[in-house]
Image (cartoon, rainbow, N blue to C red; front, side):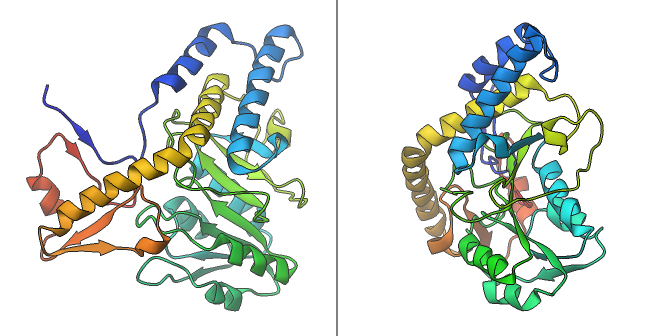
Length: 317
């Protein structure tokens, strides 16, 4: 088999061996429903509680603020429909489709543009706020350019409005940069496991208890996850997400430096070819993403000429 090169980690990552080892025994040994009061159910409950603590430790939240979902898309939709059906919503033109397509279904939405570097001007958001604005939804790390939005400034706008809540899509943040849920006065934050070497099909919506956030759920049923997300929680996937976040927290400082060195090496090589432009503002970007344009060449045409065993994206991830 020829050697393969995978440059599409913003879309999804492989499950790390450590995460797989944490998940594997749960599939066959922990089969109780965490909602049950018997010992089998309580065994599962203990694992879920541990995973909540691991995830909360990564992002500066409390374990009770972690609500498990099927992934970032469901978390985004829950945040948007939980508030957006009640009033006006503000988002940006550079959001993930899970936010943009969901917000398009709401009765009152303002989409604020971003500049050529993919950054939103907080002043544009301030001007868009109305008396009926219920939610402002902004991605922390942009999934196309890697630029980091000024969440602190936007949180202060929400506080001054006295009524607007702040939702942050942080699927691309974990393992790439620091984000403190509590310190930034964020109301809701979306997380995904498979962006950080965890399993697909599991994520979380962080719901601030300190700020008294009350959501209308999308799913109704047995009342799991404090009634915010009914349905049997997949214990093995949640365990994998907790393990992935714990590993990401431990590795973050050195991993950031390592990836920055690799990015600089890659950019120097590309830049030396000539006719290669770097997109996004380097000073406000994470090192894990490098977005470039080749003058006079379409992305799809370029990739058609690249060896087939190299996975390089041209789309939103």
